[in-house]
Picture (cartoon, rainbow, N blue to C red):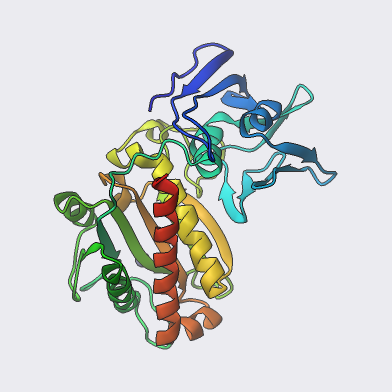
Amino acid sequence: MKHRLPLGWMSVWIACVIGAWAGPAQSLVLTTRHVYGREYVAMGDVMRVFGLRGQVNRDRTVMLTSSQVRVRLTVDSREAEVQGVKYWLSAPLALHSHQVWVPAIDVVKTLDPLLRRTGLAAAWPLRTIVIDPGHGGPDQGTHARNGLSEKVLTLDLAKRLQVLLTQRGYRVLLTRNDDREMSLDSRSAFARAQKSDLFVSLHFNSSAPSAEPRGTETFCLTPAGAQSTSTKGSTLSVADFVSFSGNRFDNDNVVLAHCIQQGLVGRTGAVERGVKRARFEVLKDLTCPGVLVECGFLSNASDVRLISQSTHRDRLAMAVLAGIETYKKAANR
Ligand SMILES: [Zn+2]
C-alpha cells in the first residue's frame, strides 16, 4: 500500500485498501489540506468515508458514531478513543476555517484499519507465533517492592500463553525459554528466522518513583510520517519519516494491538491505558505483525497484588490469547 504524498496545499491521498466492515473491495480516497503545516482531512469527509454521525460538544469533544462505531476526539488535543480504547493522534485535532480537521495519517493508519479492518497484510494461515518474554539474564527489567522481577514474570506469562496457544494448534516459539540475556535485535531476528506469522513481546511496567499509575497498555510500531505517543511538541523530525520492515504491517499492528488491549481490559478488569505508538527496537525489524504488551505496573501495589497471583497470570495469558483470536477473526475475513 502506498500513499501519494501531497505536494500542494490541497491534494488527494489514495489508500488502496481492500474490503470494508462487510463490504466489497474499496479504495479510501481522501482530499487533504495543509493545516498548520500538516496534512489534515475535514471532519465531514471522515464522517462520509466511514458512514458516521458527528456531534461537537461544548467541551470541545467530537463524538463520531454509527450503530457499530464510537469514536471520541477532542479539538486541540491528541487524545482519542476508538471503540473504548484510548489512542493518541500524531497531531492535535485542529479547528480551522470554521471546520474541524483530523490528521490525515491518523485517518489512514488508525481509523481506517480499526473501523474497516482494511489493508491487513499478514501471511495466512496464521500458524507460527513467537512470544518474547522481555529482559533476561543480568537484565532484570523492573521489579516490585516484594522482590518480584519483570524478567521472571515475563517468562512465567510467556510459558502460560505458550500452553494455551499450542492447545489451539499454533506452532509457538519463545525467544528465550530460560533466564538468559538476549539483545533486542536478536529477538526480532529470531522471529524472522522462524518465519513467524505473529510476534508478541511481554513486559511489565514501572513508573517509579511514582506508585500511582496502574493498568495495561499495548504498543505497536509508529507509522512513518507520524509521531510516537511519547513525543512532546508537534514538529515532525527526520527520524519520524523512516520506514522499517515492521511498517509493512502498520494496519495489522494496530488491529492486533487493539484486540489484545480490549482482551486485557475486558478479561482482567485492568485500568485501560490505551494503544500507544513507539519505534521500539524489538518491533522495528519484524517481518510479521507485532506488538509489545505492558501487562501491569510493578510500581503499583494494587497491580503487584494481582500480578503476584498465579491465577491472575493465567487470566493475563487467557486475555492475550483472546486478543490474538479476535485479531485472527478480523484478519481472516
Ligand atoms: Zn520491560
